[in-house]
Image (cartoon, rainbow, N blue to C red):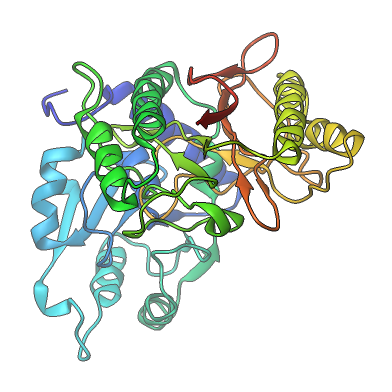
Length: 394
């Protein structure tokens, strides 16, 4: 390795490419065009805030991948990708947000040049970063090619983490512990929510010892009171108030790897009903972790939790978690398997899930979650160390 910015050894990337190429062969693809920035980084190391313009990675069956994007961002690819410079392609700024030409026309020329004008090329149709216009232009510019649905083909190869990836996730988990602890300690009546979030962001970016913090794929979710009945609200300038619960859904981030965690703080004295439901939730989480074993299925985690909820007369259904690892905004989930009753993905060692059986009630919310590593034997390992409970601050 010659570029110090590349997070992994070249052998790690070669293993990832081998898995991806096998999946491509199974799907009958001659090439794959990857637009998800997380998949781009996983395959090439590319790391930059440039996913607001068209860019991607061309994966071929018998050559190093090709990073393609805006010319000014090609300079960033030289600093972060492991491939040689002749595998980095840039298009001119006259393509950017133009009504006269489109970057996909440039991409089509590059594919033609490489003998792919009649190929079967996989594209990520259900992806934040591959627009309807991009697909239409690329289709028109490659009339003899077949653009085949290949959403999540790379995502599924990311499901089992390597030892090197798990090392990064453990570092992210240490930062997560720090940001959650900061939120708990700083929460108090009269503290403006934006000031609290500033402390959370500062804690996350400073990191832990030599492990510096990156920006997380999701901003701090910190709703209080009635706002906490919703899952994905952020913050405002309102002071925190006595008699309200606030949940914090946060993640540390190290070299783009995440380990999300949620904990809830109540300022004052919670009701007996909230304490009863909290106790049931904690019991259910323990049951879910016990079910999170290699050889079991993702649905068994969800079913174990819901069995406890049913025993206590609490309604809960739907999705309760997803795989996590390397991610870019707007989501730290990997968008493959789900922890829910209808998902039968078999759990394997090295998989990592954000298990989040949160409860959003009529007038308050209670989020207590864990990032779980599926181990070779035994129940899953929570990567974070913050005590699993409702934090009450009188």
